Image 1 (tube, rainbow, N blue to C red):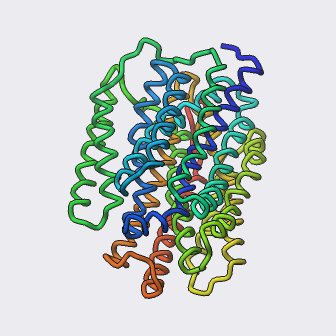
Image 2 (image 1 turned 180 degrees about the vertical axis):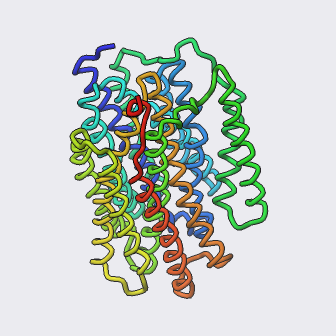
Image 3 (image 1 turned 90 degrees about the vertical axis):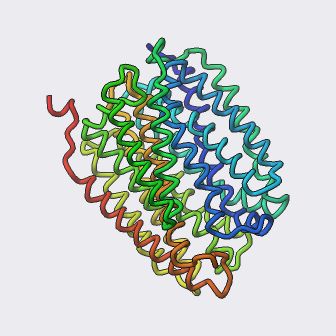
Length: 461
């Protein structure tokens, strides 16, 4: 189906606003963690659930909601997701307890899953291949603007009106995006009339919940058991998808080495870097002695660089013949930034911290849009919904693994004394060193794997 320029612009604008909202929901809470911990008397390990609950929920709902979008309409699913976000943010403002807030974060994750798995897919559906990289670059730029705006917005509002009211900032943007998408009258339903795989959805949800729930609660004994059981359900899910006529996920996509290679690179890059924001928020306020507002302004640097550089490299990816080049360079640059973060101490200068954030921002500018363009360009038009969902799942799962690594090292090194104070500063710095050392190794592995020649079906024919 041919789309007019007006329709393309409406979809891109609406999806760009939502691309700003979803990372904002994640990062704007980082600089409120100290205040949340003080209000509800929880330590740094439990505070990590503020992010991981959001991420776990989004991963669980991502693939099923992508299928819902294919059957009932991507536009309808997108709007419904934003409505769930609106409700969850309104409830979070009233949070009477820590675990009520966590449940609100679970709802936000579900709504974000519906938005994320349909927005990139709709952009690919309405834009021709020769303009796709640029459009993806603009949408990805908005992701990084959201990442950039999250810390300062969250920090300023936390200091001025309290962390409860941080959620107010999301409401008008969600309403505008809903209004814009309502103006796009063309519904996209590549699997119209299809049936929803309830059995596959159940197996997938159990696999993700148990596996990732176990990972983020290591090294407790029950966490190991949950992880193993989750892997069993994952095996059963994959097996069910090879025989089910109304499968939830087209597993044959992973036979395409271009698609599978780029998805692995996405997972490793986010697994290696997502916890940076979590750790920096705690480091700058506790060891650096900054207020939430000051820390938020400083943390603007990395995503600000990404917001500037991502659309440039997104357009460049349309012109580069070897699609491996930019993502590989990007991962190596990110690895250099992680190596710098491993050296942070009690007297690390703010100049070094800023330089590190600039380096990592440049690395992600090289990596994100070009790698996403590779993923979405490696599948047929009827598979863009599932490809978009898998790209998002890999990104969100990588984020969860990154937080899981952080939580494991906090539990092992700091134990029950996970409240950060002058007496535990050295232990906290050890957590940083080991966490980013692990992330550095994953980033190098990702860069190495991305250099392999990957043949897709179109190349082998």
